[in-house]
Length: 255
Image 1 (cartoon, rainbow, N blue to C red):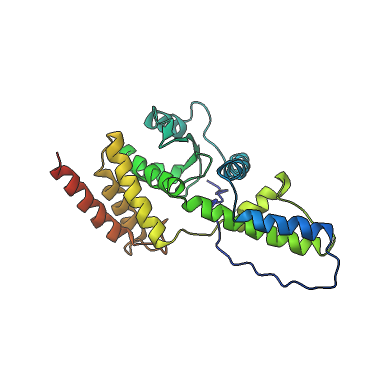
Image 2: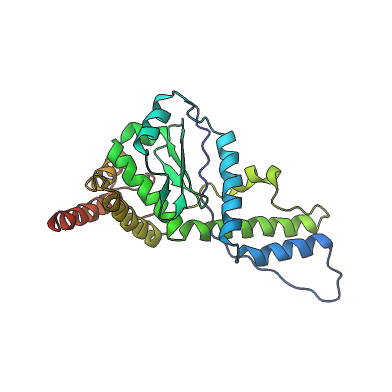
C-alpha cells in the first residue's frame, strides 16, 4: 500500500528579526509582523480553526476509510459513545496507510492509521487514543501549532521582502503540513500524556491494563526498547511498559 501519510506535528523553532531604521516597511512586512505577534497569542478558537484547516487538507490527501470499510467500521464501533472528552468534541477517521501511528489535533480530530489497528487490540488502540487526546488537553498540541504558525510567518516575511507576501491561506496548508511532518513531542510531554491516557482509560471504564500491552508491542516492533518506533526520541517503549504496569497494579489495589 502506498504511504501518503504526513503527520501533523509541529517543529519548534526560534525566530529572530533585525530591525533597520530609516527604511519604509512594505505592506507585506507589516502583515507578517502582526502574524508573528499573533502566533504566540492564538486563541483557542483560532487554534481550532487552523487545526481544522490542516486536518481537512490531510483528509483530502490521504486514503480515508469510507462507509463499510472494515477498518472504519471497527473504529466506529470502538469509539461509540466517545463523542466528547473533557469538554473536547471528538471526531474520528482511519487513514488506510501502513504507519503504526495515531494523532489528535486541537479541534478534536483523531486520526488512527491502519498499521496501528493491524498491530493492536481494541483496548490497546483506546489507550493510544487516550494518550493522543492528552497531548491536546494538556496544551502540547497548541504550543506546536503556535510554533508552526511562527514558521509560516517567518516565511511570509521573506516573501514580503521579495514582493510576494502571503498569509496562511488554503493553498499554503499543504506546505504547512509538510514543514511540520517530522517534529516530535518532548519526553516530558510524552510522559505527561501517558499519565493522562491512563486516567482516561480508568475514567471511561476501559481496560487500563491495555496501555502496557500497547507499549510492549511497540518495544517488540522496534527491537531496541522503543527507539525507531512512534516513540522515537521519547521515553523508550520498554520503560513506558513497566510504568504502565505499575499504574495498573496500583489501580487494581484500589478496587
